[in-house]
Length: 214
Image (cartoon, rainbow, N blue to C red; front, side):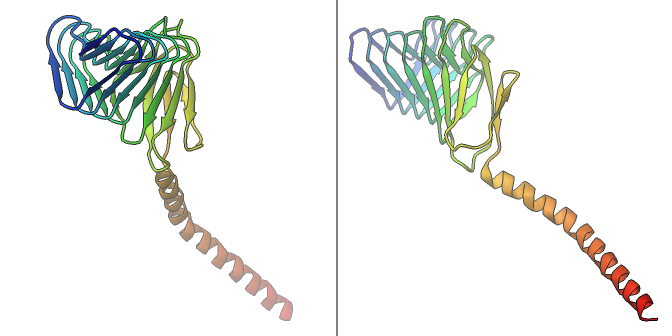
């Protein structure tokens, strides 16, 4: 599915399958274009990206499934400035040097949104020249995650304002449910010890009071 005009909208809700080299699933070169996939995109050729946005100020959205299996075949690819890529579906890449999301060197000030429901198998990559890359994680307060964030110096933001750990090419956070479970587990493991210490302290005070009575 290809579009070269500006301000165009391309939508896939079915199945797109390509097998040739550079066989993109959805591809737009026009500025202010919109690419939306709620269906299935499968590519098996070399350098065959699932969704490619080459224009500027464009929007790419995936709520379906994107699967690529050959080398240099990225799930969502952007080479235009000030583009926005949003995912709430599944992106799975298995080929050598393939990235789930790839921000090219010309794609400055791009924004990537990972929303609730996102399943990412592969790296989230921005070229070192792709300045201003921002990754917004909006997965829900109960979700835990661990993503490989490589390439450029990303600005990573947790949309639920949870403590976020970044570094060494990774972004981690624990869901509220997991934090609560960990706290409960710690309480249960220390409660018996605390109760035992309280009993010993009360026995010590009792013995001390008895001694004073004599």
